[in-house]
Length: 210
Image (cartoon, rainbow, N blue to C red; front, top):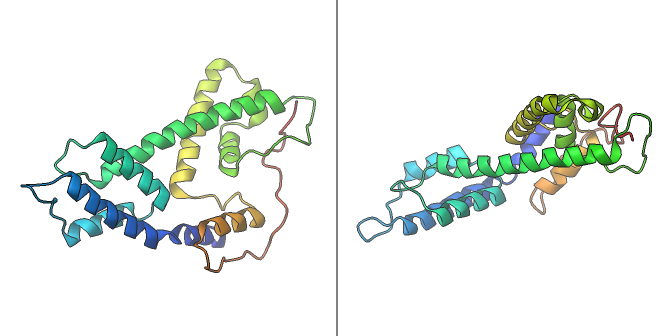
């Protein structure tokens, strides 16, 4: 789909910087994991493997994950890309839990069966989509505590999938997607434009009510 292709273009805009960051961190890890008094030996094959496995990451995300690995240490002779991914997955799980709590707070504040608040803030697109996948704001407002536990699982699974794949274009309008592209591309690069830049439609048919 054209929209998905544009999202992938925006994700790739930071790939050169990501590759540079990977090389820099490999040198730092080599110093931290010295072998026989010298920096750990790096090979072209090792470097390329790290780039192949981690090259899709945002440079800032990569930096933060590598810093965590450096701070916490590694039981291996030398870190592997999976150690970096594990840090990202852990941080993402914490963020997803916070986003779920944010949705519950949003529902308590803004969602009601009989009252519509035009001043209600919009949920972030990925959070709104995950909430809809979990049943929608009105359903989450009314469901039991036990059912809410199952809906949380659906919400987090969908939010994790979206953030891992970057598959946002399926429910973003032209204006939203262009905004993401402008934020993602490096300064000075031309931003691909969509043909349509229509106003955003409501993320939730029945939300937000109170």
